[in-house]
Length: 437
Image 1 (cartoon, helix red, strand yellow):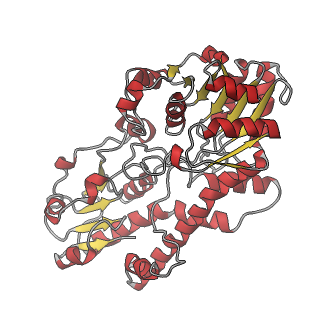
Image 2: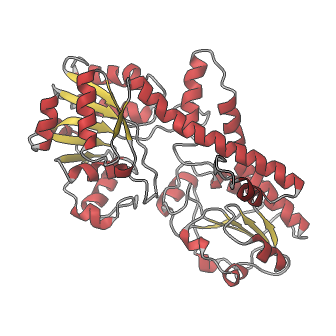
Image 3: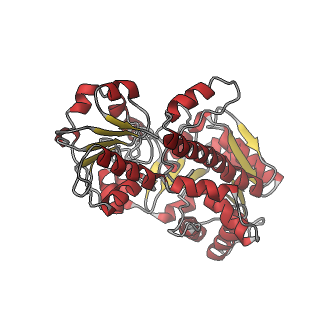
């Protein structure tokens, strides 16, 4: 195993990345600065973009993609040239909130078919404890005809990349690493230390590393759910939640979380992986699932408040002209997968409102494919009854009141500033009906 590390560094062996999305691609690019890397993805269209120096994820930028030495390919047999494999495919949930392991199973099948003796396979996908050993290993063994622990070794190192975040990058976030035995752990740790300046934490087992990943996001989910519940309570009391949090936040140990729509494929998904495994063992989760319930209902809650404010402003609800600004699951990131803004859209439709949506950052093709949503230009948004400012994109944080005024038509202006980007007092003084979480 230690020879494998040396051979990678001396460029006698290659590392492969299976899955080149928001997580896998930055990892491939980082490793390529030190060693030889094969970047594999099923999606031929995506591979063509990378080959042409285009970064659709905007995680590293076109210049970096243009100049990287990663060998981008959609040909799975290329994986046979590598001895150290990192699997970074998404692990979504089904509509009934059960884990959808098909991407990680599919990746294991493809890798298994092309696995050679003496390889190390490291999974990065978020899973519940046990998936790497109980689900992935049997597939790798079956497809390759090799024996785990004898012919190849496995490890797990959960991704902690924060899409759209230019500060917390692969290099600057401490990396959890694990391996099936001491020798594998040592090899995996050394390989990641090549690119992770912040260093690694050696977990004592693969299951410990899997569990750590799942609870990181579950903790965040629960904290945001608490803030969302407070927001619902304070709105009923006529108290501004943001002001309450600013006041409470002056205490040294108060955790600074804010209410909001929890989407994306980590925080809104990972808790379900943990509760699913718990259910299998006969334990019905209470805190985690109640947090999920609150967060899953927030889109509906925002839409209801839009309707209530329209009624209070003497506007007809059915056929009301409503604009939603922002559609991605988080600010300054083109990713629309598992966005909760769609919940607002669907709920408004139930009231006979067909909202127009603008998002200068979003991946428009993806939004059309996944949700049937077509974006409009910001400049075309005029004569609105209500505007929902849903995502804190840089383009929106600098709005002046003049710019916001232009979106509206006659009558009272209903503004839902979900992220609290604007100055509440100024807008209320100007006669707006202003609402925020």
